[in-house]
Image (cartoon, rainbow, N blue to C red; front, side, top):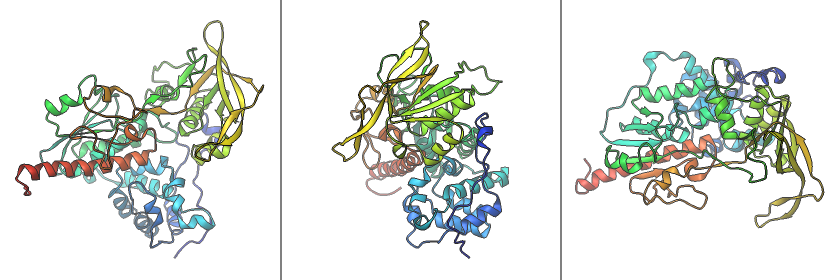
Length: 474
C-alpha cells in the first residue's frame, strides 16, 4: 500500500535554543514506525530517477521497498552493495540536489525522505549487528595499492579494492582517519563515532592505515612505488588549502580560515573540557561565505559561546550555495544573516586584535558571459560590523605538496591534479580523484570518484597481468 501523503514525515530534532549550546547531534532520526510510513510514500518508479541522481548509484527503490516491509537488514545490504558510508551519506549528502531532487513525489509535494531513510537503515544495522557479523578479509591477490588520504574518496576506494583481495594501505597526514569527515564537519551534524565505525569496518576487512604520514615530505609517491612495492597509487588528498580574501587586515589576531577554526573544534575537540586545545572564545563573530562550511563555522561559533554570529555573503538568500537545511538550522539557532554585503577590510585595535569588519553593500549588476548577474558595490554604502573574530569560509584548493614532489604529475591552473575519465593521471600507475581533482565538492561525489578509481585501478593491474602473460589471462 502506498502512502500518498504529500509531505515527508518530520524528523525529531533538539530545540534550536537548546542545541545551539551543545554539540550533540541535532536530529534524532526516524523510529521504525515512522521509517516504514515514510518508505510507503515511494511510488517505486520503473525509471528510477532517484538512482540516476545518486553519484554511487544506490538501488534506492529496492532498499526503500525493504524498509516498507520492515526488513531493515535487507535494506542495509542493498545500500552497502554500492555505498561504503551509508550512515555518513544519510546525514551530510545534499539529497535535495541529487536523489531527492529527482524524486517524482517532489513534483506535487515533498520528495520521499531518502536521506532520512538511509540514515535510519544504517543506524538500525549498527545497533543490531553482532561482532561475528563484522566483514572478513577477502582472499589476497598479492597486489599492493597505496591510497593517499582517508577522506570519503580514499575510504570508498579502499573498501572496493579490499573486497577484491587487494593489499590496500591508506596514508593519512593527520593523526586520525576520516579526512574532512572528522576535521571539517561538526559533531552535531556527523558524530565522529560514526566515522570511526566505518574506518574500523575497513580495518577489519584488511585495510592498513598509516597516520601522520605526509606524502611528499615523509615519503614520496616515487618511493612508495619504487621502494615499497606499491603497483598503483590513488591520490585522494582532498582540497584542504584555505583561500583568503586578500583584503587589508587579514593578519590581525582573531582572523581564521574556516579550516583552522573547524579543525580545532572538530578534530582537536576544543569544545570538550577534557581536551586542552588552544582556543580563543570570541563574543562577536563574522563568518564570510555562504556555503556549508560557512554554516558549520557559524553554528560552531554559537556553540562555543559567541553572543552574536554573522554570516556575510555578497549575494542574496536565493543564491546561497549552502544546503537549505543547513541555512534553516542556522537561522533557527539565531545566526544573523547580513546578505548582499562584501568585506573590504578588517579593522584591528592597537594590540593587533580584530575589532570589526568593514563591508560595502552590494546590488545585482548586468549579466556576465554565463548569463548570471554579478554583484557590484553600491557607492558610499560602507559600514562596520563590530566583531572580535573573523572566519574566512570562501573555499579551498588542493595542497601543492604532492604535485610539486612527484615528477611528471600534471595539474591545472587552479592546482587540481589532471586526471582522465578513468582517473588516470599523467603518471603511469598513479590515479587521482575527489576534491584533489575537482576542487572542493561534496562527500558523495568524492565517494563516487573513489569507487571509479577502484574500478580503474583493478582494470589497470589486471591488464598488466594479461600483458605480462603474453596476452592471456592468468
